[in-house]
Image (cartoon, rainbow over all chains, first blue to last red; front, side, top):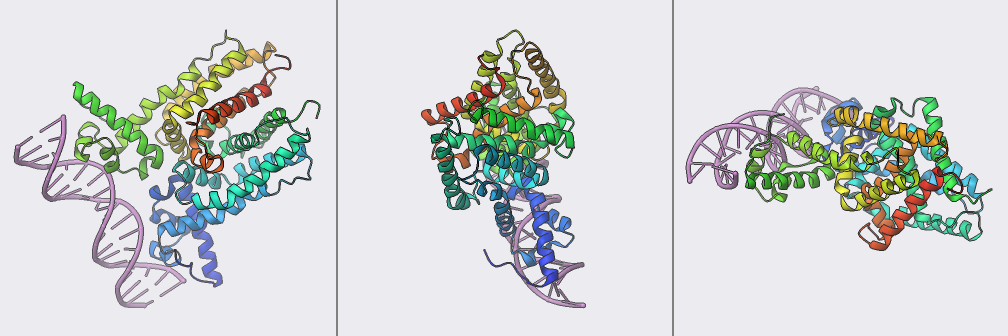
Length: 209
Length: 209
DNA sequence: GTCTATAAGCGGATAGAC
DNA sequence: GTCTATCCGCTTATAGAC
């Protein structure tokens, strides 16, 4: 609720370290399951010191969510009506898979929050995400009307992209058991990107496009 | 670790109620975040009484996971080499989406467990799931060799099916914000099933099949 | 088998010295 | 700004009567 303290260099550094540590722990255990102790230790400081910067555990949780959300939505914002659909979708899907490799914890953080009913994220979903999605749905509809995409349901298409790209971050533990690989393996990363891209483009691009 | 008590009718009933309540709470908060109190209340009994049947919270958690896993894997087991690929995949995908409607909590339970690194499920993944997947991958490969499927990566195909079908259970809160609908809405359920089915079949069935 | 009461310990948050 | 010490509520689990 209250303001985060400190604007000195060392203070800023500590805040960054706390937010990073918070992301790691919250993305694994959610708000309830996370231990403040664990976050403080990971950030390399004492628990009271952490609480000097963030007044409470849930305040820190909200700060982590908020910081991560912008980065999370960046690739989607880039989809532009004037772009070529194939190129725009390719760029979006490619960057989403890359994001699952570079920021799996961010993906898992939102996954846990949403699985729990998005108690802290409801506002952001309704206030920020919903209008953003509405505008992108309009773009997809225009492309469909122009015959540049097959007449698929735009929302289901977006869900499909999210599901398949984020799956490799959220379910990495299962994927590693079944394949022995992670996205950090260059060959596996490449085959993943290709498989996801191909299945979606096949489903939405008109024949011969 | 220890054995679950009681084999009387009333005892069996209580055990069922506890397992059901455990699924509801664990699927929302995971092992750490779940409160034994809450599970007991939902099961309509006192906490000590719950602990009479299951010695500890994590023992109950493992029991819930175990009970749910079989049901979870049932549709996959049915995929048969002698079946027609289109029919087999249609049946599998259709039943997975139906399962996301009828048992969203089961889906979310595994999602949370796997996001957390599958600490309790590692054994089951390696011992039960891995061999099962290996056998289904072999079937998919045979179909590809016979020209009945496009030459896609079988594992990525399975991941794609899991991702897109389970997404509607795991991210239901987000989907409800964005569409105003849940899978309990008959029209939305139908459009979801159609969209998921079409995108995957389009991606894997040879042209004209 | 089920309850009330309670032990035992964890974990979030604060006090106050430095 | 950071630490040690500590408070206190909450949660798991047990004891023991019924």
